[in-house]
Amino acid sequence: MDSYIVSARKYRPTTFDSVVGQHALTTTLKNAIATGKLAHAYLFCGPRGVGKTTCARIFAKTINCLHPNAQGEACNECESCKAFNEGRSYNIHELDAASNNSVEDIRALIEQVMMPPQVGRYKVFIIDEVHMLSQAAFNAFLKTLEEPPAHVLFILATTEKHKILPTILSRCQIYDFNRMEVADIVGHLKHVADKEGITYEEEALGVIAAKADGGMRDAMSIFDQVASYSGGNITYQKVIEDLNVLDYDYYFKMTDALLKPDISAAMLLLNEILSKGFGANHFVSGLAAHFRDLLVSRDEQTLPLLEVSASVRERYKEQARRCKPQFLFKALRLCNTCDINYRTSSNKRLLVELTLIEVAQAGSDDAAGSGLGPIKRLKPIFLSTPVAPVQQVAPRRPAASAATPASTGQNPTASPAAPSPGAGQNSFATPPAASPTVADSPKTYVKSESPTVSFDAKPWKPRTISIHTGRAAAVQTAQKENVSATEAPIEEAKPFDQNALIQQWFSYAALLPKEQNAIANRMKNMNPTFSSDWVVTVPLENAQLITYMEPHRKALTEFLQKRLHNSHIALKLEVVEYDHKRPVTRSEQLADMKQRHPAFALLADDLGLELD
View 1 (cartoon, rainbow, N blue to C red):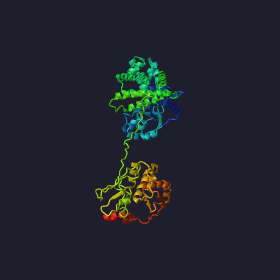
View 2 (tube, one colour):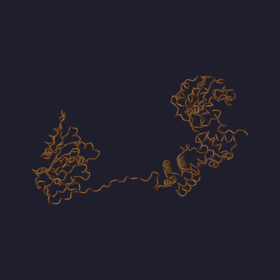
View 3 (cartoon, rainbow, N blue to C red):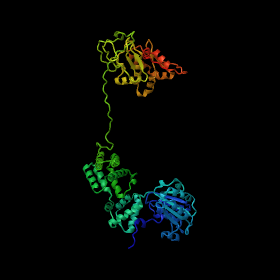
View 4 (cartoon, helix red, strand yellow):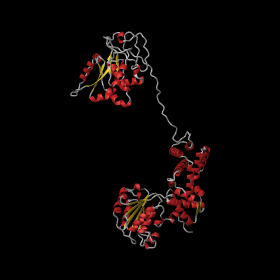
């Protein structure tokens, strides 16, 4: 019995014209041989089984042929061609870099380089899987690869070009081999089947070509396997049985069930697929690819992207007409999400079934499962509750002018009226107790950026201390009120103090919109004062600030009038020259504060406050 030779070796191309799927590349090599423009080093790179080593052998035989024909092919009749075909040529050396990747192997190759060829003009070294060479071997090979003898030619082949050193790449002419197309593989399989006397169905050969994933050698191996299983009669059913692949029918049936939608039929079909031993993740990946092919089939321009036989292509076109683009987009997104979450899911089958249900709902216009999920609206985390009105302590003036309740305009015996919404101040009821003590004196301590202090000037001690907190308290007060101050009536020339002015000044700054944060921050650093005729003077550092404040003059004046209940308030903006020649000492600052704030001076004296 004759020894059996697999189809991949038996029908291996021996000429450039017989190479499948690499027409541009083989034409370039033939033209280089015809013109005599040969490089000293070539790099053939590409996926497995696409003809890299085959083209290297054909190229080596052709350049050593003594009588090439007019088409640039080897004659196969001269002594060099016969020696090559019989495997006894000393001009062609093949080295497997996967098992010969050390420095010693490269040094042995370099010694052979120095010997000239016996027959022919070139000595060709084919190094397969060259990316497997070690770093030291690459370095030892650099000089010889860059400047080999005139009779030497190197052909390097690899499937992983990115692993090769740039110094090696720069010394080679690089040829990138393409993946085989399904049509090219099917055509070659037909040729082999005719030579071997094997009957076939074209759809069956299409499944083999798709399974090979662009590699001719893999396609030939699968072809031999299926031919043995089917007894020389390759049918579509025999191929899917032998290779255990999910055929197109399952995906077409599943898509029909999802389009109706018929959830029961989809669940039963999924159960049938799983019972045959197919993984659920494999099914989801195939279904996503099927939806992608349907999307491609909707347009004649993208139809060539569909790598299937002609009969299957017509089935795709027919089903694609019944699928809306929105359905395909959502189905693709859902399948992709399922594929991503499959590995981490604890109940994988349930995940796939839920995906099928959502895809089925995506086909209807009023479906809840649209693929994008329901519209999500962020609910407020904190519910806004009305702030309870707080009673206010009647403001106390110095002893000389505010010793009696009458001088303050308050009736200590009357019940305080409930404050109307929008009142500018928090209100506290005046306690009817006789003499205030430390325990019953109201105190407010809030962290302030630039606090101002007022003191009760009663003749007894301890004195009641009220610290107004500037911008922080003003923001809090403004947020609690959340109303306009225009609702309160204006009283004629009601007196107010510096603390009240500062408090309302910062209240106005806190109520400014967010886009006016710049002017609000500037107002925080200002220190307005008022005179006996209720003219509020705002000292500014430069004239530019007047430009910023001028648009707020009218609104700020009305705000202060309503909040302080004094219609005689007027606003004056003036530039104050500051002496920056000498820094002010801490003791000078203390003296200045005592002079401007008599109440603070009393407190400092009581505490014995001194600053060095």
